[in-house]
Image 1 (cartoon, protein in one colour):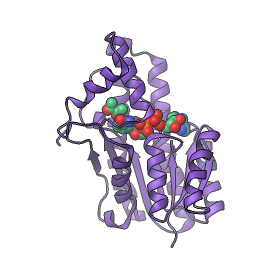
Image 2: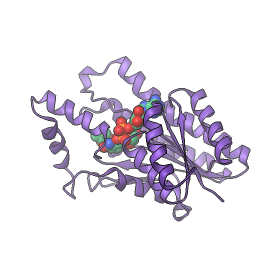
Image 3: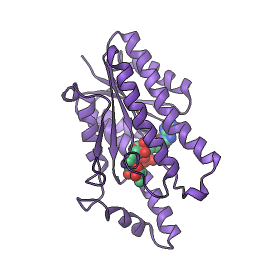
Length: 257
Ligand SMILES: NC(=O)C1=CN([C@@H]2O[C@H](COP(=O)(O)OP(=O)(O)OC[C@H]3O[C@@H](n4cnc5c(N)ncnc54)[C@H](O)[C@@H]3O)[C@@H](O)[C@H]2O)C=CC1
Ligand SMILES: CC(=O)C(C)=O
């Protein structure tokens, strides 16, 4: 049986590392996101190594109809869907007194609603295809322990752990497992944006902003996206068959739970 994964936010960062790792593991992958040029670059790089393994799929995860249409396109191209990875997310820096309604709505629309639409689209597809499947959601160490200046983002990532647990219980009778992955500080465009804001707020450089994050990491260094992708590959593969409702923390030793 060919494994087929739908990975959102796959045009860069952790999502890009995930689709590349899964393609190396023999998966067909839908490379899902909002910017076609980025999706095509990633898909072309995969297809150059694994012919016809990657399909660029345009979808804004905040729009339910986009996610359902993207899943339909994936099944039409590859004939199946076995794994849904709700990776897309946004991470505004929000000191509590600067939190406004617009930022909450924007973040929750993408991080929380995007995850719910992804779960719904996967469940509908798995039912139609008459088999179970795996759903994997991106949370964060900031969704396991609160981080200062990340109230809105942290709230969305705590919510994703909650959604992971409730749906794991609800969907188990259908043969569907639901797990989450919680990275620490990963060298991606998202993290460089946060470091820029932290540095700027302190009147210092982006590099200084990045260095602030490694202080609290037991392993003493930031994470490569590929180190997150290897954990996700475990969750997407057969070795995690007896695991559901869990959060796999790959943060180099930041939070201990
Ligand atoms: N970079 C880090 O240190 C950490 C990241 N994470 C989580 O991992 C996931 C991936 O993060 P990164 O790769 O670092 O971020 P990134 O910002 O580098 O990449 C995220 C991708 O998601 C896409 N995206 C955003 N909104 C979207 C939407 N509405 N529809 C479709 N695609 C959308 C972006 O265009 C981008 O390509 C996120 O959920 C993030 O919260 C969690 C912990 C740490
Ligand atoms: C981006 C993120 O998840 C952080 C800073 O914890």
